[in-house]
Length: 365
Image 1 (tube, rainbow, N blue to C red):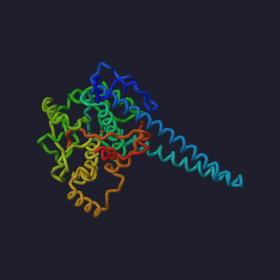
Image 2 (image 1 turned 120 degrees about the vertical axis):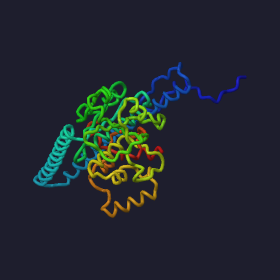
Image 3 (image 1 turned 30 degrees about the vertical axis):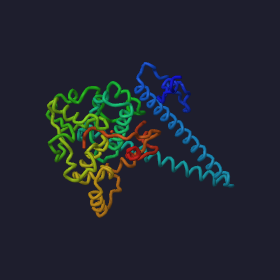
Image 4 (image 1 turned 90 degrees about the horizontal axis):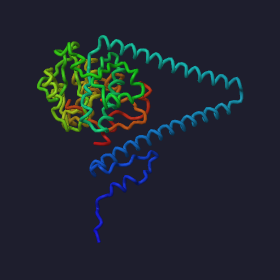
């Protein structure tokens, strides 16, 4: 009798009905077992994502019904018609005031971003690495880009953000963001070398592998951030790219002001935030301590800086660095992400539902 194998039958697993409401596609039997496992894992992730979105939609519907019921019950307890009308008018006035405030804030944001397109510091996110990333890593990068745009829009003096290399699979992912076509941001299918062919001498690639330390931000320079979520697989890639293209490279002065608990690897949105914060206050140390998560810093340094910030009045304010902590995403659970070796819905509506930016990284790590 042939001995039963402990190896899981991938064909049987693939044909087994899913408990999710979204059925998975059949797994091609021509793939290797490793490839089949990876494909199944991706399908489970997509199914779970769709299920969470459906649950969030259902929760929103129930909340709306509950509030409507409470409102009707409150009105039913009011005996006088005159009093009911007064309550209704008051509610309408509050809603109108809220809508006018939102409209005003949106108008101010559009003015700031329009100003930034003419006078802001140019910051480029290089998106030419999509072929090196897994679907989950691409998803994570899209999340980071959303944060970059939202944080920039909240700054009193935003930068002039550019996305270059917005084609192929990366372009497809970006176009799935509701409202992306309305973003006030430069979107280039071509590379930054082509987009800034007449300003090559002003291009500066930010990478932790560079020897040059960035002491200050030059308004004439164009700072490039590698849009790569690589889990440290592609070390030195951006530095090599800068050398091959003959452009300048520099690194943030992180080591001058604090000790990192591991490598100086930051997400794309963290790098953008640091640059935005520095443009606001011209202080690298404060910028690093207000943006870089505490888990990435040695405790001793963290305690000293926290005491210093507490003495100065704390860090709870409406500045650029704090805005990321206030951002929320709808229906999307952030994946843990690490961008290049530096050390990334509709506009406001797309950022109005749940999670702090670094929470998912903590949960996964």
